[in-house]
Length: 326
Image (cartoon, rainbow, N blue to C red; front, side):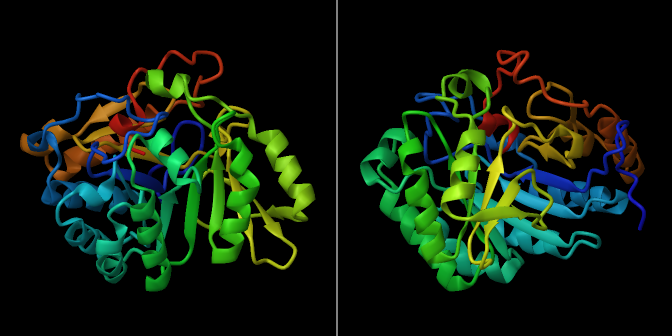
């Protein structure tokens, strides 16, 4: 099927990040401000029927990949039911999930059976005390238990997302490399983005020197991995270890951006660093036909900007990451 989801810059949009909740049981310093209470009310969340219907229309237009996100998606009740329904939609050939893993030990088996084959786990440190400082919660042991449960369940690949922050956890990058090598995980190092006040105060670290350092120390060379995401990858000569770099600030990837984000209330955001959006919640609840939804999706894709403006206008985006959808 030829995709109809092509923006005005010639990019094919085949990847949607689906937020199923904006709530999280952690309060990572770069994401949700401590004491924040401006979450969406559950009655504003898209229900499973609404989500399935909208994704079905997206898939008819050419969408192929889904990543289930939050907040923390495993806080959404009966999430595995939704995943199972979405995995059966014609055209959707890849469903993954991003999680902080605090709930993963209880859900790993059901998620795997429902159709999730690969997961991303947020893990910024291997030190329990530092984890509590960054996440504002003493949950390190739960995260590690969930991560190892997922490994035993057979998810493949398992990617570790480490937000690298200057003078916060940058001294652990090599340790995280060794941890991922030992466990056959893919490491992804991520630059902080100025999303809301928390993001702007998140100890930004330029990953270009880090990339050069790891390339030399571990004898890594360029590698392209399937998956549709923004990371640029390096791999060891024996192919046993891979590290990716997500660098929206030091080396942006806007020219190849193939994704949009659907928030829990049905707002479709075309770019993390811009404010263009289309609200589908009211459409779904006020009699819109599938043809109406198709028309609005195509109009939304036309709004997708050429690039973000994190460098030029770091104060532009006031919404926090959890509000947008991870």
